[in-house]
Length: 149
Image (cartoon, rainbow, N blue to C red; front, top):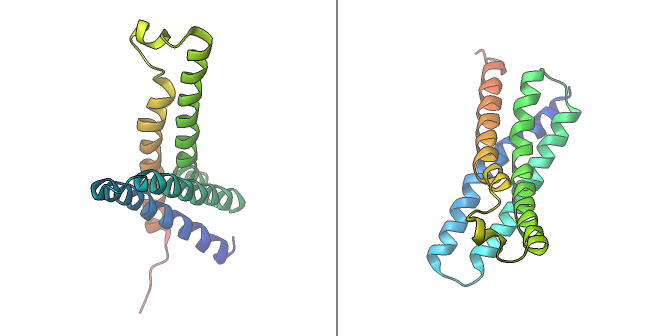
């Protein structure tokens, strides 16, 4: 594997690991400021950026060579932001379709909401991101060459 491809992949992983908490902090700061519409704009922009960087990491990982374990962790870290977005969209789509098919009072009558995709988006995908990021970083630190003086 070329060092530039590996370097780009590592930069994408580092950018993703730094970008996720930074985007949450930006959105929370915008909510505290109370400027109308700013939290929504920052949420969409940072979410799109996280998904783009995650998909870039996935593409670079698929083109690179390395151990299966390393690739698995990198694919988890890169694919989970995209999966989070897809699950959030599917949650809203299933909710809207059920209201169209079964009536607007379907959910209140049964006392529930569509939980499956929401749980995936809010709980499972962030856990997969953390597992993939930590696993990738541990393997990177373990496999990097030691500098001799």
